[in-house]
Image (cartoon, rainbow over all chains, first blue to last red; front, top):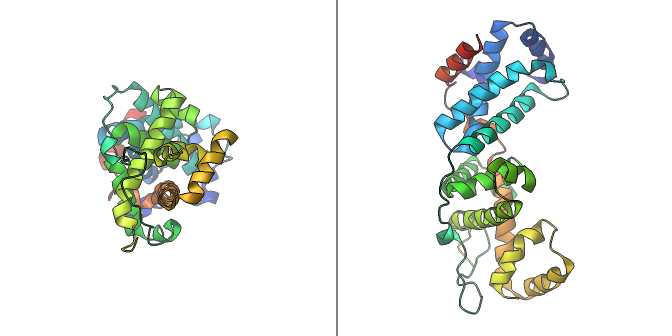
Amino acid sequence: MQTEARVRPPENEDAALLARLRAGDEEAFELVVRTYSGRLLAVTRRILCNDEDARDAVQDALLSAFRSLDRFEGGSLVSTWLHRIAVNAALMKLRTRRRKPEESIEHLLPVYKDDGHHQEAFSSWNEPVDVAMTRADNRAQVRRCIEELPETYRTVLVLRDIEELDTEETAQALGISGNAVKIRLHRARQALRTLLAPHFRSAQP
Amino acid sequence: MTCREFADFIMDYTAGELPADAREPFEWHLSRCQNCQKYLAQYTSTIQAGRLAFRNLDEELPAEVPEDLVKAVLAVRK
């Protein structure tokens, strides 16, 4: 049953589930894999932006989780624990995969006149973003715009702004300097602003 | 400070990490340049929009449980 499998077990069922896993209950393993693989795939896909790598990372994450059941303290939810392991598996995958050449993002950055002023006259966005983002179509639109970012920039934006890793953690994950992380994050945000503006700006400046 | 220089400092400013000697000219420019006021507002809205876009993981779920992945994981574990 797809619907049932996608519902996260409530908090008070986590302890029972964990006990079954530790006892080697095969049905419990299958339940966890069925329940969480879709969610974890969404998480690793955000970071890796590649279906095959994302699936490999989920597989690595679940197997690693099952191997380290003894280390799960029960202080957090099973879903939170698995999320963290999936992020780590995705980061490991990022580190080991062949580095792609950095794509240009210049066409999405602000353009300046010779005197240093913006060429564009910016208009206000038509409603506060926290209001706009209560609507699913806007959330989907923003995710599509993030997917449009060149990969080297998108990854930094996802790790820093979405997964909320700090600069140092992101630098380590990507094998680049903290300064490079900051530069890429700033450019990624500016580029994303360029992509979002047509969707959010009001008709009047 | 020009608009171009202002934009370079935005990330540190929004993170509260802009040193005092740069913050003063930054805020002076901000108080006088409406275009940069709008740009700064859009920059911070962009960060917020990114965070809120991924708040509901259910929206990103694959349409179906990835059956081949489930089978692969269970097979490797055995």
